[in-house]
Length: 467
Ligand SMILES: Nc1ncnc2c1ncn2[C@@H]1O[C@H](COP(=O)(O)OP(=O)(O)OP(=O)(O)O)[C@@H](O)[C@H]1O
Ligand SMILES: [Mg+2]
Image: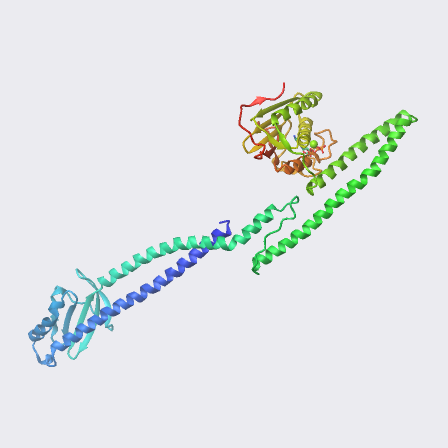
């Protein structure tokens, strides 16, 4: 049971049902004692009646007279009572007909007890002592047993009903009690590095849960300010580095233009310029990432036809692929428009293509599949390279992560996919990597939601774009 509300409901139901079961057991004992006491009272009343009919002179009367006197009073109640009169001198002086010549068992030292007679069943027996006469009166116990059986049956039904009702009530109560916790979980789940300003709603009441919410909010405040500081530092450092770098580049270009350099020095300055361009690009990318995280980038979104967009992208992509002796194929499915910033999405596709071409073998094929549905536009770029272990699929979208730098040209900075993720998230979409369709290679997939304004999509057949 992984959910607390299920556990609470089960505990509540078990506790409530167990308590009721205990009460029923106590009730069983009390009711049974009460009913048996009733039988004892009946036996006593019958004894009083017999005693009255026997008269005071019974000691001097013959057995026949005693029998007549007792039978007179007991015959009409022969269904209810079993009666036996014994005299220490004369033996049994009376035995009611319903006893069928059987003797009521005697338990020495006890005056009220239960006994069992063959053909008659269970009896409640009471013994009374008169001078020279022991009177034993018994009543059937079967009515008591029947009442108790009925009681057990009713209790069993009530327990089952109680179990069902308490499970439902327990679920309801635990859901109600855990509602603030669920709200906290949902909000905390939404709070990420790109969404640090959201806070957990705090209840008006002053209890443990609202205290916890307040504490978590304070923690998010501290996290937000730390994140802001890091972002500001990255943005400011990148910005500050740009001016000296531009100056160094200008100086190097001046040296080249001067033409006074030896061949080896000229080559060294050329290399410096290349490296400077690379550092400049990394700084631009870092600036872009920190501005994207601070939501300071505005997209130029407009309704685009993905098929036309991909046709134009495929022209450049094919040239890039052919340059490395590889092939590029674009497949598109669906008709309609999606709202996106074409320059940014082109940037994403170029980075995915560059990654795919970098790992694909010569003659390998990179396939771009595009599918426009009613709710989202899904694009995947799949290569025939070595692929990546599943545990790296998530990691490669982090900054400066390069899994096998030697597999690529070794010059990447590891920021490309982080930028792709930022751009796709700015479009409210998702990006992820999965293994290639045939078990080898890597497929990087992104989806962008189709907004109502741009949605005129209807599914068509799969067709090749361009060529
Ligand atoms: N298609 C792919 N197949 C296998 N590994 C890949 C693939 N795409 C990306 N990777 C791995 O993910 C890492 C990160 O990719 P990313 O595009 O972020 O950086 P990069 O290509 O190394 O540098 P750059 O910043 O120039 O793009 C790569 O270094 C590579 O190890
Ligand atoms: Mg890359």
